[in-house]
Image 1 (spheres, one colour):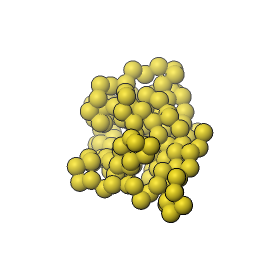
Image 2 (cartoon, rainbow, N blue to C red):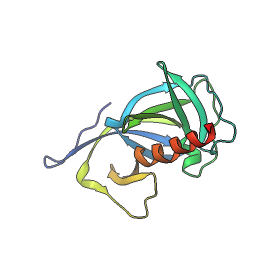
Image 3 (cartoon, one colour):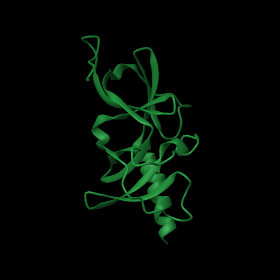
Length: 154
């Protein structure tokens, strides 16, 4: 189900909303490649706790992160039914383990707040349908965790 902006002067901001526990988050739809079920993971001993490991996705090796750990929650319990979002930014891809996908929403970009206290991996917070939803910023995630992955390999 796709929702639409409520006012004619709205600037459409398509988002994929998802849950971590009972917390709502979103990604810009332009950064989402796909939503997929868990695949075989190759662990990286000594890696940052937010890094689950590496996966093969359509012939490409990508890093799989546990967004629960990244945002200070307890680690995800991985099963064959665990979902992850493949997101991209700056030519790189990353898998983001989440608890549940909600839906694609089209919010009003004019309601996006850039709060200085919103966090390192949050691009801003959108007020949508009476709910404040942080929008995950892929670029700092990729910068921090791809660097951490390369340090583990060396």
